Image (cartoon, rainbow, N blue to C red; front, side, top):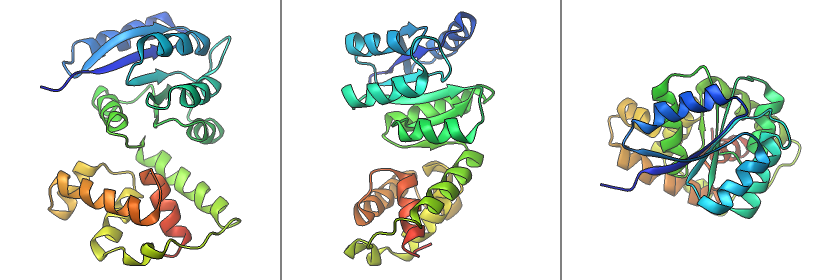
Length: 218
């Protein structure tokens, strides 16, 4: 059995922190190793505990979630940050992702969706709910048109299956759901995604969608 995912919860509301800790602590996949009430405390905890994932609120005193996320990614790039907030605001969403967040979810999501977001971040994937994915792709695609780049030479080698997978990624579905839709295994989807990222010379699924649209591949 693999080691549990080590988590730090960052939120200025004690009741919410306790609720999330209780929810996660009963899951064998997770180990809550620390709690912080603001971004500055979070930085100290990440340095001391080197967690795998930080669940980060946005609007907190002393140091807010966006600035804390940016500093964590600069100083501790192996630690992934998932923003967990009540604010469904485009500006917050885009700033959080630009700061290096591996996910952006709302506090109203189900426990299963939260677990999925944590697991996705731990695998090195970007996790967004479908509604947020559509908004981000639209905005990043709009920005990309003002700064077009040459397509990587091997981008032309994207297969029909890889393009099918990218189209599904753009709707916000997970690798497991893609596998179910295309009647292939989740492992096969992951292999295709690795090839897609390499061919497009990007690191994240969302970046792959944006670059493929920018180059007219989708």
